[in-house]
Length: 285
Ligand code: PDD
View (cartoon, rainbow, N blue to C red):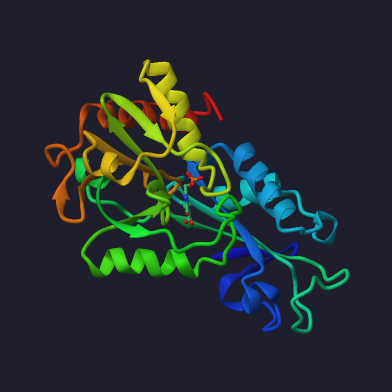
């Protein structure tokens, strides 16, 4: 597998980053995950705009690491044998003697690779997940897509240890998002999800689902559901580049609704699959 590192294309086994890289030392680094369907990156412009926004919020100077990401993405997407997969892009503040303050003029570290989509169970189970509810122990800038992910790592591990797939995160009594996904609840027939703020990552899949909901005439309220609204919801969904749109069938071991994906999920999932097919065929970006 060839990876992109600082302008070069290198076999993954021989790609090397300094032990003094600030991504390694401080988690001083941002990233993107871009799905690919039929060799075509999904919503590439939005993902690259979010990477730029993460870099700006982290005070990273793009001039210290010039790169034409669309060309890198296109080349990586070409390498995916089945045509479907995930692109991973990472930018760190570079290698420098360990001091918290920004180094002067250290070149950014630029890294990217592609991997095939992990094969999923056939049939509807591929889009069914279970979740637990946890306190949101993360920092206050969840809108920055940073690789400083130890809180998310601990939360996902807690979910796995308890036999679930995802942790839904509560802050000030409200469910803002998941450890690796955005969260939607269907309450009284209305689709509820947290509004964009510093408390959530503005998911690209979330945006697509909101567009599809509008097209399908599903009423949406961008206001994070309370914990009680979540547990009493008719349906709960999560979205991410990896899972696309998935139905949460159980929370803390208790069924959501009747414990099966519901009608709002079915409509959004079907629409998302059609959208994806259009991307795969080059009918839309
Ligand atoms: N993460 N919120 C969090 C905390 C996430 O980590 C993710 C996705 C999302 C969904 O964003 P998007 O729809 O743009 O993928 C929301 C990726 C997939 C990851 O870290 O692997």
